Image (cartoon, rainbow, N blue to C red; front, top):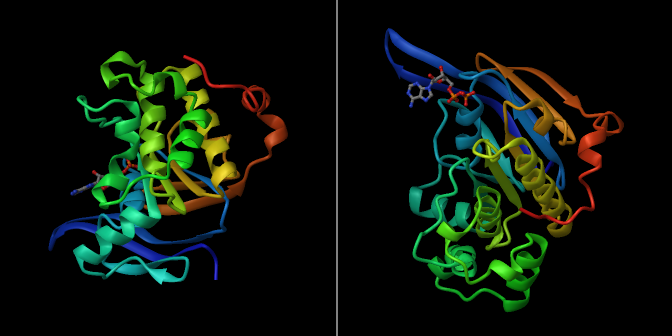
Length: 243
Ligand code: ADP
C-alpha cells in the first residue's frame, strides 16, 4: 500500500437544491518522500482536498489512508491526536503566538502534547531553518520569510510523517517564496517527509516531484515534473537561507 491513498474522494457542500460538488471522485496515491503540488484555479477544490487530507473535514464519499490507517470516520478526539502526531500544517498566515519567542513557538505543539522537545532536534530544526541566531526573537522582530520558517519549524516539531502546506508562500515576495520552498524541500529530504503543497503559483509547483491539477473538483492531470527545466529553482538548492 502507498504511503497515502486517496480514493473516490467526494465533498459536496450545501443541501438539497443548493449543492456544490467541490471534489468529485478524486483518486491518487503518494509514495513516502514524495513532494506533490496541488494546483488549479481559484475554487477548483484545492483547499477542500487539503482539509480532507488533514482530517479537518469529512467527505460524503471516498477514503483516505495514511500509512495504511483510515484518517476519516474517526471520532474527533482520536482524529486530533492522529493529526497532531502524524501531520504537520503550514498555512499562508503564520499564526505565531506573539508573546512567545522563536524557539518557544517551534516547541509549542510538543508542549501541548505534554512533552518536552528533544534539545538536539530543536537545534537541528533551528539550524536547517536558518533561525539559530534568531531563537530568542519575538515574531514582531522577524521578516515575513523568517516568520514562515518558524511556522515550518512548528509544523515539524512533532516529527510528522506528512506535511501539508496551503499556499505557504502566499504572503511572501517571489524571492522569499522560493527560499521558503527550498527550505521545505530540504526539510523533506532531511527528515524523510512526504510534502503536499497547495499552490496556484507555477514556479512553486515546478519545484515539486509531481503536480496534480484540479478543475471544478475533478482531477484533470497528474504529471511528474522534469527538474532540468527549472533552472532558477535548482540554483536555489544548496544555498543557505537568508532574509
Ligand atoms: P480552492 O482552494 O481551489 O480555491 P476551495 O476548495 O476553497 O477551492 O473551494 C472549492 C469550491 O467549494 C468553491 O466553489 C467554493 O466556493 C466552495 N466551498 C468551499 N468551502 C465551502 C463551504 N464551507 N461551504 C460552501 N461552499 C464552499
